[in-house]
Image (cartoon, one colour):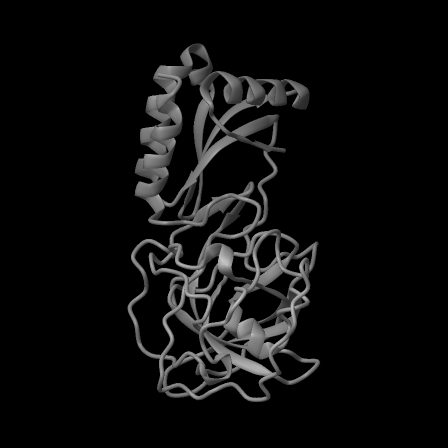
Length: 305
């Protein structure tokens, strides 16, 4: 039964949210669907020379040989597409809850952009599409999947149009992760990140401008504020867009955890349903129980203060 818990959690999470991003160091891989009818980006920089260890993340980076003409790859062309059935559901990553937008509306945001390359090339994105580092795509925590945005460097005026088809980034207050080609066209591949303005674009032209959202450590963009529970500390075991899935996991864990299962409860806020265990008045006791769950049942949890 102990070994069955991780499989059970994985199956239920998959059922409630399609392919949400994996709660790992940085976001899930991202993908690309370029369109040859799009206009090319302006002011394309020369191909950079890469150091053995540069601004890109860990062992990610460009390929040793670039098999395509990056300058000839066009911007993504906005077109009418139905929203993805699963990729726009609420989800939780690294202890933080996200609620994606479910309608396309004017959106404008300023913050830090980063990029991903060969480490994720060919892997599935949150939309199920394979990531193509040579396409013009991006990952965003909450913009609708799919949707289109113009990404501009305010210091140089360079801009590209990309198609959002994945979730991320989730660390360092970054607001968007771009494909390798999009980052190359903006001239920050060697540095790894840069400040950008992200603006929604629509088929047939731009929508009315929206007030700009500034990302900061105190104001992470488009993220639900963490809940401060009253009367104790709780261990969060999952966050679901479906109350039914949260109830199903609660019933199964209640049978597995014995007396401890009596402390299981579901807290709902809008379309997000959190399965939690508690409360404990002492934070040290809550952490001790969390470690026991991890060791005995391979059951991860997040402390909710």
